[in-house]
Length: 254
Image (cartoon, rainbow, N blue to C red; front, top):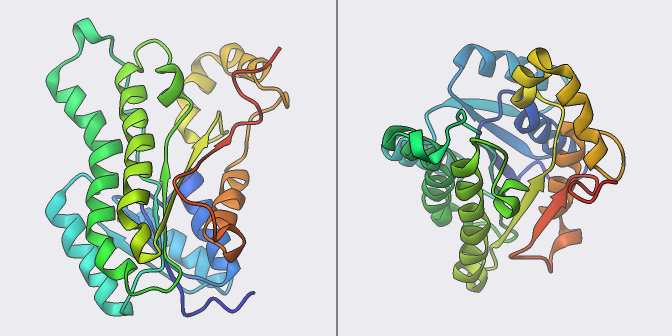
């Protein structure tokens, strides 16, 4: 492990999929990792796994779409450690599918809250503690849907992720004077539970997705985690306001 034990990384939505692999990778890099989620049983299990691997980790259960819960818990974390070095705004999701004509306002607000509000709430709450770090970073998650507006019924998901792309650059501008870097990753089709429904109900469709990826396969959560590990490291000290596509050339397949 590198000498990063005094550095604290907060990862939202970290009890499964990409989020847990990010927590595991940063823990292996030497960070103290603080996982967030809404499934407390899964959170406890993940902490056991990380601790068994020699990683210093703890779990905070709260809803990232709830402003008061985010403020309260991020403040607790920041005050406990005296700073936050890295914030990974991993929480988010598709939320379901709906065409615009049939879309309820409730669904619209839910998807926007899940992806955009969560990023705003956590970033805003963490900024005072990120200022206390000498090498602070925020990492957000956008998506290829932020560029191509998503597939059928995923239009509001694509809209929310386009907003995350914009807020990443806006935060980078806002926080540069404090030395806080803000970047984003844009995962392509990563083989996680995010795609579990279509994988089980329409396996032929799921299998065909790789045909639109230049490298001819789906990505793995660890491959997103490795990019984030780089982005928060000293090797990326001159990178800010960037979005890194982690999709194997998705959208350019033959």
